[in-house]
Amino acid sequence: MADQKLILVTGGAGFIGSHLCERLVKDGHKVISLDNYFTGSRENHVPGVDYREGHTKDIEKHVSETPDLVYHLGEYSRVAPSLTEPEVVFDLNIAGTFGVLEFWRKRGSKLVYAGSSTKFADEREDNVEGKNRSPYSWSKAANTEQVHNYGRWYDLPYSVAYFYNVYGPGERAGQFGNSYGTVVETFKQCYLDGRPCSINGTGEQTRAFTHVDDTVDALILIGKKGEKDEYAISAKEVYSLLDLARMFDLEIEFKPATKSTRSSGASDTTKLELLGWKQQHTLKDYIEEEKKKKI
Image 1 (spheres, helix red, strand yellow):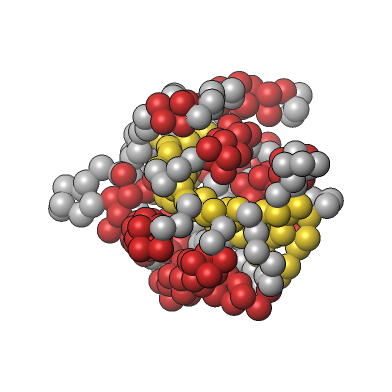
Image 2 (cartoon, helix red, strand yellow):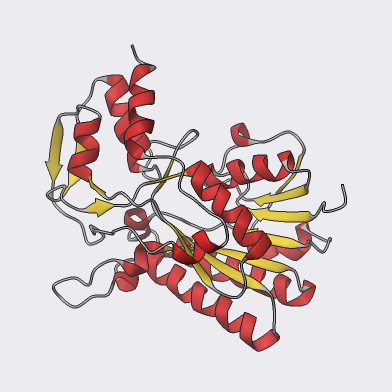
């Protein structure tokens, strides 16, 4: 096809990355995935994708081609666990992303960087900003600044996309031995198993839960039309963790709040909508559909 591109997706075997790869292949592009399988899974492999296993800091060893577009999703992506393993965070997010930035600088591809909305969390009572609440949040905020700097220093094409609590098919649960899961899938598994869910703090902390298909739609548009700017990929509805538990009809076991306990709200998606994006999915509809599957 005339507009076929070679596209590299770091973290292509992960939750969001696998959905993105599937869409890119469907659209007729050649897709390379680079993943170290820290949280990614071979079960997420999509036919037609060229999968390469490796650390992003070694990207030059694994990718000799010059992609037209690079989606950099392959980073450590959990807040609470990052407080217990900062060395892993710095290896994957600082060293790994520096490798990607240097690859970008040398190849001149367009880069879409998956930033983190955690840096926008409300300032705590002790005046700690959202970006300084955890090694994960700090590393993502620092990397976002570095992406902007590389774009300015070397006049490179890029955009930054901010994710907001992405949910949908293919998530990983986060209880019962896995600390890297997402809260929607964790609560869904509690519902399916007939177990209570656990919430740190009061449960009043809020999230703008955003469906993975809406997120991928946005990434495609940002890859095509985004220009040296930041784009929030956020649902308009905001729910607390208590709301989420009630949607699944769950009993709740409350635990003490952690240093990473936070609230976040919906973000302004005007710039994304100007690219042609529109939210298509809601959390309530998704949960109702998932609950029907149990009947």
